[in-house]
Length: 110
Image 1: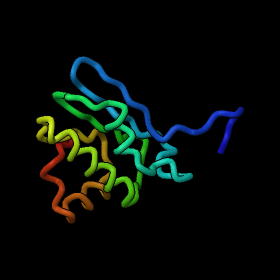
Image 2: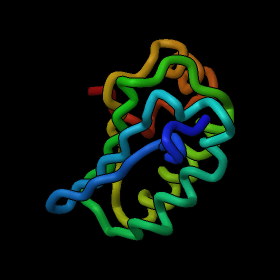
Image 3: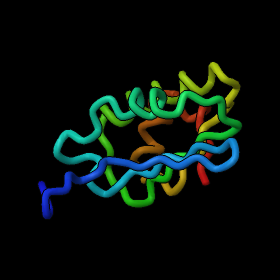
Image 4: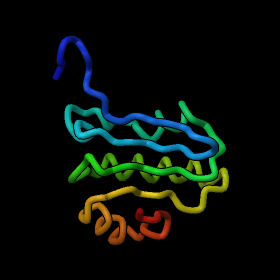
């Protein structure tokens, strides 16, 4: 979907001090914008960071590709000392899926 020639953005990133925040946009899970997102974030922001936050407030249901990217993101930053990533306003279904996969131990909910 293009509006006046602009591509929809799947997510944006910001760095303040030693905190990386990844904000997922409403269009994240549509039009295949979520492919390799975790790898892209790590390549763009190699770190190290004291904390990594994912703002999920604009998203509802997220698919398995998102979870794969989330785990990839966690693995990359855990190697740098980030013990738990912070999930901001995640959907309850995502939390249930992380628990079912036994990944909830790697994340804190804010």
